[in-house]
Structures are given as C-alpha cells and as structure tokens.
Length: 334
Ligand code: TXA
Ligand code: MG
Image (tube, rainbow, N blue to C red; front, side, top):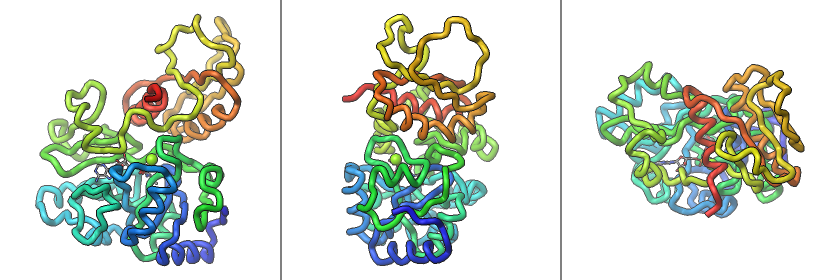
C-alpha cells in the first residue's frame, strides 16, 4: 500500500526493514525496493519479488556516509580510499561506487562478488528512512527484472501491490534515470553504467587517462557486461517493441505507432499519422527528458501500440545515460 512520507510512516517503514520486511522508497533517481543489507532472508525475497538472477548484485544505500565501513572496506587500498574521498563530493547524489566488500556483508547482496556497490541517495525521504532503520539498506530499482524502472509510487504499486510491506510516496523522481555506477577496483576509474553524474563531471575530479567508460566507442565494452552483471543488453524494456528514430525505415512502419519526441517542433511538413505523440520537453532539455522518459514509456506501453518510436539525443552529459537506456529498451528480445 502507498503511504505518505510522514514521520510516523517513516518510523514504521524503518521498523519493517529492521524486522526483515520489504519497503519501497523514493530516491532522486528511481524508486528502490529496500531490505536490511544484513538480513539474508529479506534480501532473498527481493530477488524473488523481482525475478532477478542471483548473480546480479544489489546497491547498498547508506546514511550517514560514515556507515560505509559496515558494508565496504575502502581503507584496505590507499588508492581506493583517496578516490573515494574525492568522489564523496557527489554524495548524497546519483553515484554508486563499487568498492571492496566488507567480509560481514552477506554474499547474496553482492551476487557472490567480492565487491559491493554503495550510494548515499539524494532524497530526503530516503535519508529519513535510512536514519530511522539505522542500518544499510540493499535496494535495487523497484521493478520486475528487465522492466522499466519506477519513477512514482504508483508504478511500484502496479508491480508489487500488497506483496511488499509498504510503499513510501515521495512523488515523482526528480532525475528519473538510475544512478551512475562507477568501479574503483581497477587501475582506472570505470564507469559501468552512465547516469546523472556525468563523465564530464567526473572529468572535473579526475584526468581523462584516469577514467575508462563503457561507451560503444570504447574497446573494453565487451567485458563491461561481465564486470557489471546487471548491464544486460535488453533492459528497461516495455512490452511494446521500441525503435529509435533513424534506425528504422519510416516507409515501413506498422499501424498504430506511438511517438516520443524530446522537443517540441513547429515543423508541420511531413507529419506522419501517429496514434499518440508525447513530447518530453518544450526545449529538449535533457533533464526534463530523463525525468519524464520512463513514465512516458509506461504510459505508451498501455495503449495497445504496435511500435513506440523514440527520438535520439546527443551522447554527451546526461544524454549518454538517456541513450544508454533507450538502446537497451530497443534491443531485440532474446
Ligand atoms: O539509482 C539507482 O541506482 C537505483 C536506486 C534505487 O538507488 N538502484 C538501481 O539498482 O538502479 P539496480 O539493482 O536496478 O541496478 C544496480 C546496478 C546493476 O547494473 C548491478 O549489476 C550493478 O549496479 N552493481 C551492483 N553491485 C555491483 C558490483 N559489486 N559490481 C558491479 N556492478 C554492480
Ligand atoms: Mg534496475
């Protein structure tokens, strides 16, 4: 059930988590499905609820940041410790850091890996919940595996309804796209999943030769999926097929096509007959596009369309994360 984030409800949610329950909560990126990171049965339940493969590790949410020593062991390596200190400026915020795992953190959380992804979410309700339960919370996005991530409490309710103890409602997520996942385990800082903390922002803290990414033009792309098991190609996908504009012959479109435009245009020439057209931003602002993208995909997915055609944007800044999610959503079913 959906609950408003009153202090009493946040306390109640904290008690549920402490006692092994499952609570969905808002973050600035997407809604998370949270359980105590130290309760193996509760974490197992999260994997079951999501039908998530056991090898795909969860992100552990902490607050205050000083709790990091409970789940990770960054001090074991001075280089990792110093990088962590510099990246701390992005916390609370949409940045998950992959660090050596603390031996006491159950392996089920990390999908059997020796590393753990940690973040401090930038949302007051998430922080209040972490404070109320007083322990690290393992939380993947609150959607069935491979489906579109939830950016509202209603999206979580549609998927999990009464099968979880509580859904805290923090309104629509401001960022709307999952956190940037960055590994500090290797010689270079590796961006495993692009997100709202952009490569450009990381380049303000580290030099170009200290950072490695998983862009299409990056030779190391192939190994990225193994390093971050969650980055499977088909992900974030509605049931309706998706095609990116430019990747499909516009003369061969099926009937009942929906269009997602990033920007309003006044060009009325060559107007095709789309069943539905959704425009994400008046000016094409990537922040607005990201914030509305997942909810719009869900909405169009309910309209019995044969195809959802989606705009593309420049692969820079937040545009890189937007195109990453769309490419995955458009990748064919295996
Ligand atoms: O914005 C977010 O990160 C949201 C909110 C709820 O915090 N969470 C989220 O979690 O997106 P999830 O489980 O949907 O995605 C976590 C990603 C997966 O791709 C997973 O493989 C990767 O992080 N990951 C987690 N732990 C890892 C590790 N130890 N090494 C490499 N990748 C890891
Ligand atoms: Mg997810």
